[in-house]
Length: 315
Image (tube, rainbow, N blue to C red; front, top):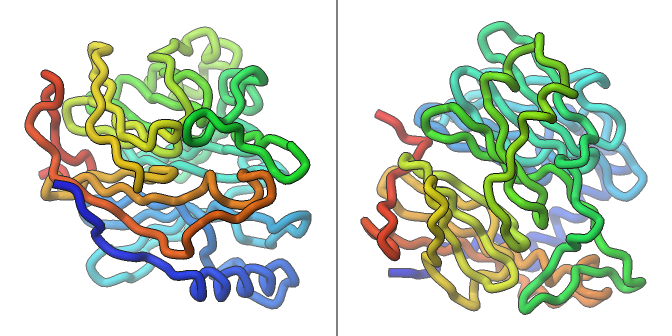
């Protein structure tokens, strides 16, 4: 039912990647044509990749922020989207990315905000920038396994703002959250309407449900939201009617992130071990050096909740 699908990278590979990033921070790498720290969405025909990393420490990577579309069969680059400072102000970190109805939706996890690009018109807008519900609540710190605080060696806690993003199958709602905030939702029709101001939009944000610290999400064709629950190392499910269930709990799921349902109804779960990185583990790097993706076949029902199929492989 549940098994390790593959080992992704070992410690040596991580060191090589880190060295390349250091080179990039010293401007010896062409960041306009390279990808580091990407978040990705696999669709039926194409792969969209958002370049999340725009700086290392205090060193900004020129031209790094971009979204690229590739043909998933040939690997050919179909288009590259770049945005100006009105869309990506200094400090922006693009995070989750979803595509629906010819639009690309992206969260900004550093300032807090939503970026919307219309693939038909080529127009891009930034909405709800720095608004309270797009930012991590001051009274809701990130919690690791068993409730341990995310802290560095000096006791500093990370601030991660708008991060998770999903769109309901009917397209009516866009759901978003920070790792530790409630899950919020907003009518997508209003979000896409340029005549609606951010102040008006903010009044239409509704709390979908409360939750603990999560690393990643996905949604199925029936509108069930899957949550990578950090504190319990488990995958939770929230149905559209508010019912909740635990799909699986396994101590190997350290920092479950970037959840994905494939064409065969298998749930892929990368175990990032993020909570064990030195910056989040009081200065001690406790990662194993081997990073795995786990997979499981989705049952038809879990605790009475019917489960659907992938939103990325629609016929």
